[in-house]
Image 1 (cartoon, one colour):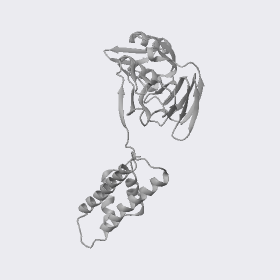
Image 2: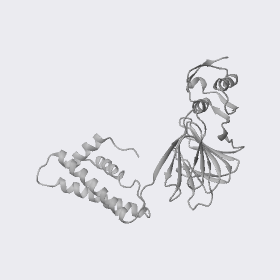
Image 3: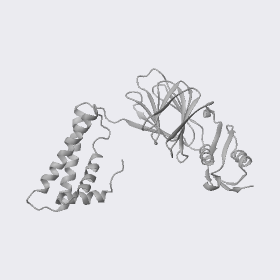
Image 4: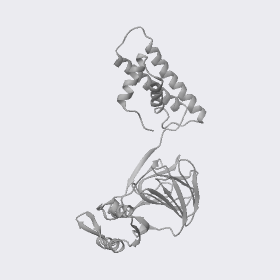
Length: 323
C-alpha cells in the first residue's frame, strides 16, 4: 500500500486540529492511520482485526477531537505532535496487547545472492530441502526456517528447489509479482527475472499448486509448467521436459533477447547493451553448454539472428543486424 506524502499528512493533521478538514481530507487521514497497525500482527479472524482497528482508530480521533475543543489556544505544531504522540502511544499499547496475548512476532528473513559470473549456488535448508540459484539471482527465506513456516521469496532470477517431504508446514515459494507455489515434497524451478515480463513455474517431480493474488492458476505434475504474463495477468499451461540447469548448461526456448541478455549477464558477469526496439522481434532457441566461452556463445546468437556485436572487457554491445 502506498503512503501519502509526509508534507501532505502534516498539513491535513494541522487542518484537522483546527477543525477545517473536508470529508475527503479526513478520509485520507483515516487511510493513513489504517496503514499502521496491522503489519506483522496475527488475528484470529477478520472480525477481530476490524474490531481492534476500530477501537484504536476511535481512540486516536477521540484524542484529536478533545484537542480541537480545548479552550486554550496552542500552536498548531504542538497540536501535531500531540496527535502523533497519541498515535504512537496507541500503536505501542496495541503491540503490548498482542505480546501479552502470546501472538507470534513477525519472522525474520535471510537473503541469499548468487554472484553473477560465478557458479550455480547451492543452499541447504534446515528442514532438509535444498535450493540452487542461477548466478545473478536473489532470494530470501524465513528464519527460523521450518519452525513456524517454510516460506521462500524469489526476488530476482531463477531458482531450483528440492523439497524435503514430511514436514507439517507446506513449502511456499512466492515472487514480488504475487505468484505463489505451494508444495509438500517435490522438485521444481521458479523463473522470475526482473524486467522480462513473465514468471515460469516448472515441475520436475511431485505436484505443486500455483496461484496469483486472486485465484489458483492450476495444479502441476511432473513435466508440466505454467507461464504467467505479468502484463496481461494471464497464465498458459504446457508440458515438456524440465531443463535442469544446475550443472551450468543453458537451454533457451522461444526466449526474447531481453531474457538472453539477462542470462548472459548472469552467467558471464558482463553488461549487455542493445537497442530494445531493434531486438524486439527476435526469439531464440538454443542450448549453451556449461563453460562455453562468452565469445562462442555470442557467435551462436549472431548465427541465429545476424546481430553484430563488440566485446570489450566486461561489456557486450549489440551494434546492429546484418541483413
